[in-house]
Length: 182
Image (cartoon, rainbow, N blue to C red; front, side, top):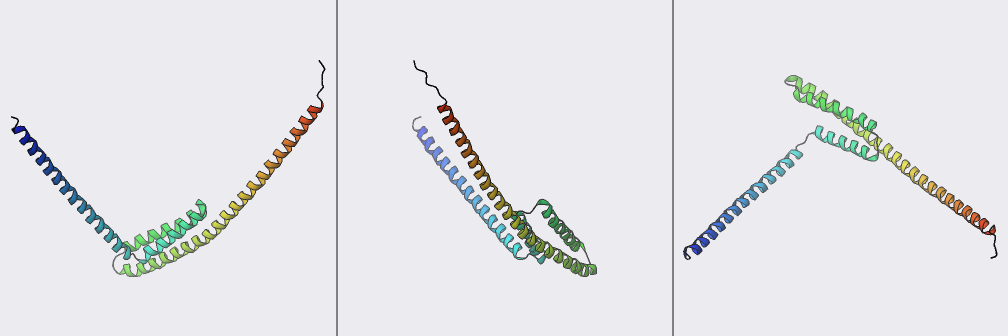
């Protein structure tokens, strides 16, 4: 019996090593499959980004301008005034894609001209809003810092007055003391 147990032990170790090697092989295959899928996805995304049309480019530029305006400190009402025309441009683009036949060329050209005008208008308004909002934000920041300095000066003066009054009170109280002999 003692001779069979070591043989089983070696056989079991050999089988477990084979199982580990088999699992590592599967893991390698899985990693290769994931890397290939990732590379294909990246290459497809690159090709798609290179083939974007003028609508997508114009829309991206308009959205970037709106984001800059929002980052500069534009209010939500001002941003809403810019988003409304962008929605109209998207609806016009969808309608242009749905046109068919001879109406497609004429209607699509008219709609694309309208879309381009809307996108350029939104972009110019967003750039103007960016400059207005940034100046407004800088003015508010300057005002807040100035008010902070003034408040600090007022608090400092109030503290100095309180300390002065307290000292005068202590001196007055000290001079009013009576010495009682024992």
